[in-house]
Amino acid sequence: KAGVTQTPRYLIKTRGQQVTLSCSPISGHRSVSWYQQTPGQGLQFLFEYFSETQRNKGNFPGRFSGRQFSNSRSEMNVSTLELGDSALYLCASSSWTGKGETQYFGPGTRLLVL
Amino acid sequence: QKEVEQNSGPLSVPEGAIASLNCTYSDRVSQSFFWYRQYSGKSPELIMSIYSNGDKEDGRFTAQLNKASQYVSLLIRDSQPSDSATYLCAPQDAGGTSYGKLTFGQGTILTVHP
Image (cartoon, rainbow over all chains, first blue to last red; front, top):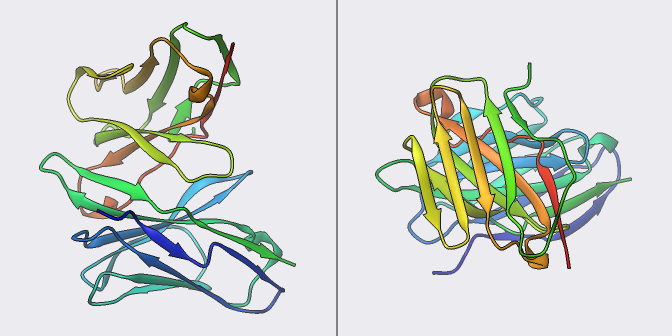
């Protein structure tokens, strides 16, 4: 099976702009989670979608939003970008194994806000 | 108190030695436990998952879980320079509020020197 794919891989934006990142999960996976990784805060959970519904959300401002489509592909959007939004944004898809949900990460989108 | 704490690094071991990585977590309801490896500039890669108390072996890797002590560890036998990376511990809670959410430790940087 193909792995999780994310586009674009790199992005440079300026403060105040908005950005949309895309994630295609592993075939058959219906859950998609998003994380932000920065040197200072590490890996932090943004939100999770399952069957087009947001089931869980982390402690991020409302500028961070997402959605999931009927084919399980997901997008996340950050509006009014701030310098502190510069980070690696990771998407992970998962499936239930009978014991737990194992998450597999995509390559990430590295966002630089100038 | 941090939710997930990993042994402070960096950890340096000679090639062929055993590397021991430790992780404690604060949430007693954690049910699933994952170890990820992250090379510099790359996304996290799943190494091991463990759900029950005791040991789980996979090749050179052994995960150990003790839920009563809220402790999980990863042993890497016959360490190789290619094992040099950051290792991330991630417990996952059971239940609806934890859908799709992994809580990561800050990571332990491992360096295996020839």
